[in-house]
Length: 192
Image: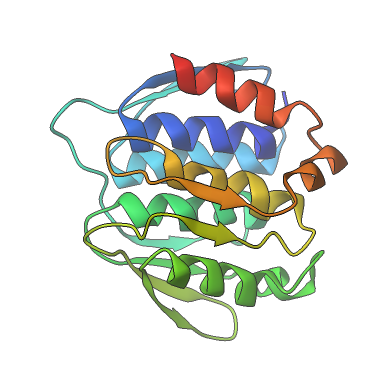
């Protein structure tokens, strides 16, 4: 499995309190984005590592907690962490993501803009941002993807769990760049 693509499903379990196992990336993986699961654990999710899989869940009554995260080693998955921060108690700081400014779009500006639409207060700096989650997300927001596949997939998580709200993802087809079956898989996992 692709660890970057796995991040959406792992975060979905952490946000919703569900249980997701991703096979194909685990403790023996050389993919940097497997470290994303460790960030979820720091936020309060339960993470079970096996050589070839990662399982994420969250105990009922245990809230996700914000934190201060160095994401130099996981810049793509850090976008997923930014959306998960919407569901955490307390602020979340995502550091060492200057590379966001050099990707398919200016991801720092995109992340700040779309999180703000959903009700967060976001402080933007050169290579990090601080996300203050809202008490409740703003429903019915149209999320711009900026033709960036990771924006579409990360912000799909805004609808997850008891605090999730309906959103419209503009240009959902941009996920075809790296994950053509994302929306079908997302729908299947969300049903469980």
